[in-house]
Image 1 (tube, rainbow, N blue to C red):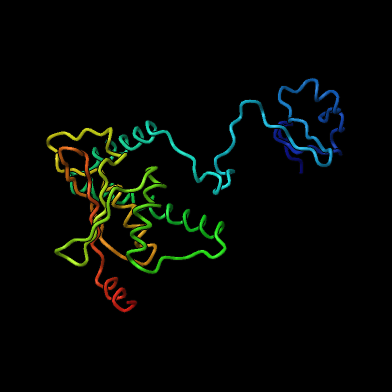
Image 2: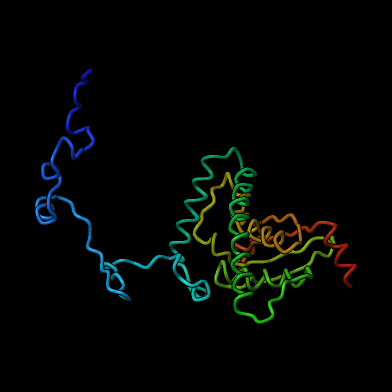
Amino acid sequence: MSYPQPHPRFSVLSSSSLSSTDYVQSPTTASSTTRFSLPSVNTTPGSTTPKPPGQRPNIYDRPLNKTRTAEVSASAFAFLFSEVVQYTQKRVAGINDLERRLNTLGYRIGTRVLELQVWRTESTSKAPKRETRFLQALMSIHTQVWRTCFGKAADGLEKSVENDDEYMIVDNDPPITRNISVPRDLSSLSCSSFTAGIVEAVLDGLGFPARVTAHNTPTAQYPNRTVVLIKVEKSVLEREEALK
């Protein structure tokens, strides 16, 4: 019983029915007639393929320690953050929801900031130290975390005189709110909820669970003054008492 032969374009080449010269070209002919060709590979031992001119290095190839003092353009950072606020504002129902989402975004950043700082400390210090006391952890956030994120330390660290479980980090001029104009109907909005999320993530990662919020406290000298309020859990205070 005979079957119809498929079209040559959809059939598998067979040496029994077709000669190799009918479909396979010589290397010389193929290289001269083909439209696309693979780049040549240098097989010389020890040789490296040069990068095309003008190609920028990949940011993921940079050593983490050498980027410690690297800075991001303030205008680029302000533009990105303002777009984040506008994008989030269009997808929420009120101020509380907007601040909650900004806090969530900041929390994701804070987990990465803590991971980066721990890695740098362990790789550069012969005896890396983990903060086990709450006040030392707050001082680290006040200086190191603030400098890593905003290029400067915070302006103040205070403890509430009314409640033992409340601490405050004061920033007289937060960089993330310098170029943000809040409309009148959103006058109570604090875009520094993003910063509060960063602080909360770092505290959680260090083992000091707390609820962190941001509040606008403008003054005549500092109209953008912000207070990051930290309300630690009861277990943290009990542990501090046990370590005294």
